[in-house]
Image (cartoon, rainbow, N blue to C red; front, side):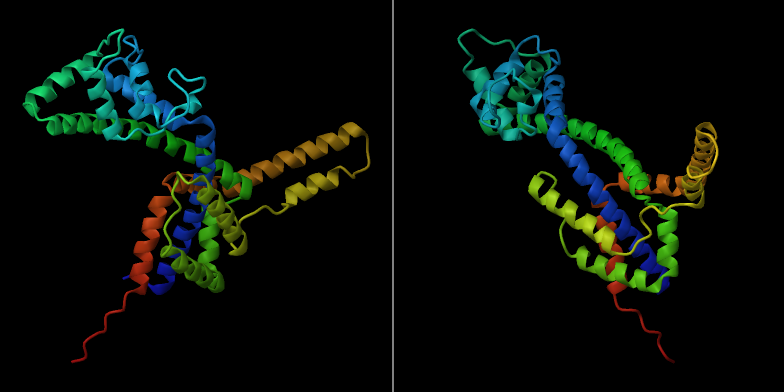
Length: 314
């Protein structure tokens, strides 16, 4: 069974990774709000689902301009900007729009993409005239295609989080090895982390789609990181001090510049030797995502809070 100190160290590390992950997740959501990757993925996914990724039949135009879908975004299709497109289309809206386009085609006529034409024939055969069954088949087909789209987004997001995690780890010197060492050796820090973690465990994560909630949580988590006393941040190393001192040495400009460059190079090598492993571990931990660490935190907090079994006395 875990010793109480070991369990507290684990909870402290999980909580630190949770806060760092939430900071990076908030940055990722901000980036997503700017470039609208979800909307682009959805458009591409629908094209591949229909069997017409190049939109040669112009069916995607008609689908996006149908009232059941067009009501989800401003303007019309093709849009002035990809950012104007919806990032989510409910399966029911998709199915009803397709059914209406097939039943009531526009005056200029309609050409069905190959995958859609084949799917409709199969759904009609299975439904045997039952409209509800036919609609359910369309919705299930659409949801299956959107599972693939979700996979695109999750894989890309994980790589983005790795990059953001490494940037954040270096920027604030969040060295996982140093953090673990500090938590293990400092009882007061460990207890403060566990107490804060237990309070956070009962609170839900802010929804990623709520930009205001994400922004508020971002500032709160930065404040928490600064106030917990974790060994995060930069201090002037001996090599950096030597570099600073070199600029005050006597001699010509070239000698001073050379000494300063040499000291700076030594400082960089020292920093990489000391922190590179910890930074990489932090980046990998952040890439797991805030939900992963939040679920893990709740499990370990529950273990710590559970009553200890008493030994039977015979």
